[in-house]
Amino acid sequence: MRLKRISAALIAVAVVSGAIATGQARPAKKSNRTEMAVQRQGLAFAQKHCSICHAIDTGISPKPEAPSFEAIINTPGLTAQTLNPWLQDSHNFPEIMNFEIAPEQIDALAAYMLTLKNADYRPPIQ
Image 1 (tube, rainbow, N blue to C red):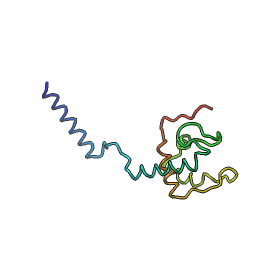
Image 2: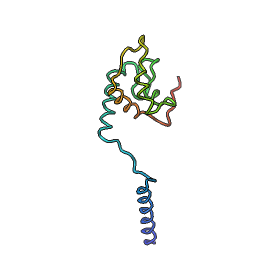
Image 3: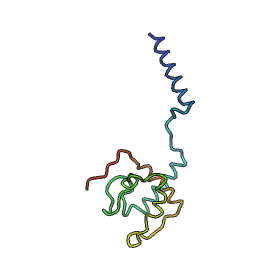
Image 4: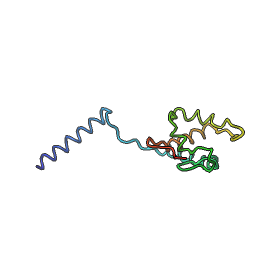
């Protein structure tokens, strides 16, 4: 009985090791410190410049016409590749928002916003 358990454990280790070695299974990716620092910079930027109008995390925005960051990032078709160009062009409404976001701030803001991506997101009922 004990020998069967040891054999089963060794087989499991061998299968997992082989899968990792061949690239079929990968350990979970952890955010590195640099990535987390950029995300924190993006959050700080959002708190300072965006939170007057937008909910910068989950919830309802202070201004009803301004979508929450959660709603924005979970818009169908919006991806990490399309987010930066979208943020560059998102404030082209001078009567509402009249400022530009510097490229390095866009990268940080996008990195933060991507942390709100959720495959199970459902827009709130209004």
